[in-house]
Image (cartoon, rainbow, N blue to C red; front, side, top):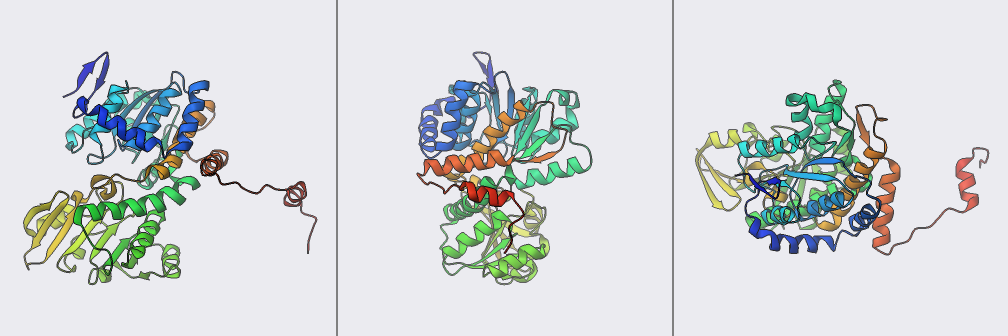
Length: 424
């Protein structure tokens, strides 16, 4: 039930978990030096004074550090969960104890999820921050009267960017949104190294699987798929990639992976991982061909990549054999193991990306919020890439925190690059 304490409404599992949450938030902060530096500057300059931010993100230790940096910059932030299974309840409690309203409970049902989403919208945001575009979509469909006050938004997932680009293409997007997901310092590192490591971490925790010798089928070879495939091979797995994009498929082949249609891969796969941002990637026709004991997991944002309803309809018996593992016994006796109900495995069964990776992603979020405020009223409704100067600043700050220095151009080199006269 929602509570109202000191004029702040929130809905978390148990505020008494705050001390544990604070310790975990502080631990993550040690590995987020870029965001810490931005937070220090924000406290001095207050670039977000008076700005209301509604953030629909994974409620984790790393997110907590972002929210506190935004708060330190003067913003009034409300946080709700972007996934029912990814909330760390102790983190939610710690933020509430620190005066930041949170609406998120791990394992919340669909009704509660959308009640929390509505709370974020009723916060009347000037800026929206999304993982999956649920706030933007709901705001446009059910609260159009609020759209005129929104300065802009940010989106940090491939799935959300796909939705928002479709809105922009159809002229339905009413305010500018920056695709933080597409920042070079985001997808090169967060999607590849973060998703790669955390996905295998989640599956390992859920199953206690030995990766060596397993045939691992990775559905999708975007930046997330590249990371998953790389890490699975590094753990000794035999990796097969499935793709619809010929260029991505060629890259997978050149990277040393087998590429084949999913229906063919189903005959040999031991572990299946979806990372496409699309729906019904693994469907009934695939379950019908899978080996006994196949493990199926999703690391895309929404729980639509695996058609879970089809699997459960096919099963004569469904039982939970481990905390995040459902055993689905088919009529012919084959068993297929579904992980985390088809939801985001790296956050449902593990802790998501390492803090050092999220440091860059959330630094982009914070600086893009500042950019939206500075450019208020000058950006027409559309999808925007992260400004290059922000992307490069995040990279520069990260290298600085690692005590790594770059070369600099000489005046001669600058002149050469700016001219056209010189030839062979």
